[in-house]
Length: 158
Image (cartoon, rainbow, N blue to C red; front, side, top):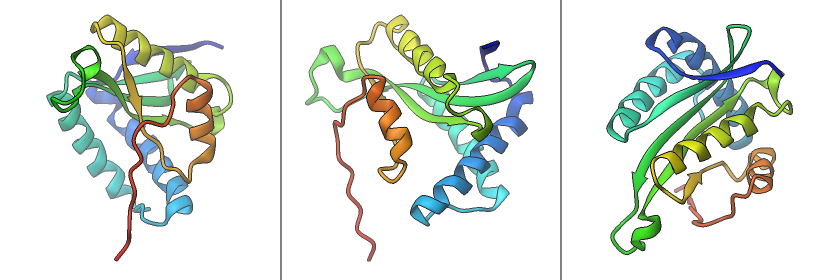
């Protein structure tokens, strides 16, 4: 596999927005509360960039032959004071999006390995990632990579 990783540049915005839009469409079929319009992906990209800039984060791209095939948001976060000091600060994969044509080829695993490397490089021993429960394939992949359920976020529509 000739996939390489690099930090996203402002000129990569359109490629990342396209990945976000494709994920929104996929997740809309799973949970029904995702917007399907392209403007939502553009707005989310801007929100993500702002959040990452405040949290020592970045977007890491996976590309093959100059074509972006996946993107991962990564940040450094801190839990509340009741969490022990040794794991209070941690890495977070905020987003992991692999183009549907590239799923099952190890690109996601490569990005997760990079998240682990970035977390260790920052001197931290814990890495978080979230996934929609309805996205069973993603949950299975994350668990095979060593992630375990930690917090359960419940929702009630009123």
